[in-house]
Image (cartoon, rainbow, N blue to C red):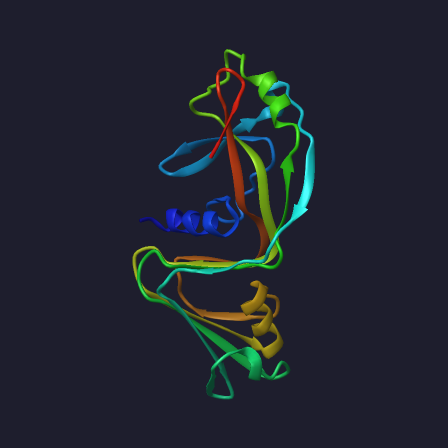
Length: 216
């Protein structure tokens, strides 16, 4: 199973949403996307077809996801700590992340925020009869989930190790919410997204020829 598919599977279990790949890709409500090789690519926006969306904002849980062969070890003053309870927030510390094989990942986020389309049925009635609408190809981004300063690390073909270091307070923020401000990293990893915001998950819908909605 590919890294994007593993991420998608875990995110669907966690928040019932499809994964954005690469995480942070700028999908927005109302985007029209097509699927190629298990990945979604933007092909336009419903506004290009004369439709207007109404949206509502929401917030959700924070995420701490990892595959089965990811290990994290916390160090301070040359000693490995069993957890964060004994972490001196003012002193230097580090966390070593070990990815024990290919297609392993870790995602840590603060509380997710996002939005969803509220008038999807109305939009479907506008678009379903258009001759240019590709019912079998077009998905509409109906809901999005994102956050600021989250971290995603992942491997593709080989095991990897990476170490994050900084003050204990920064290490705690990284471990609990993926925040990376003031931290340094060493080591190599195939996919490294830290210190940025963006979309992480989305829900998609297709419009059937009769105007009904097909979620999934």
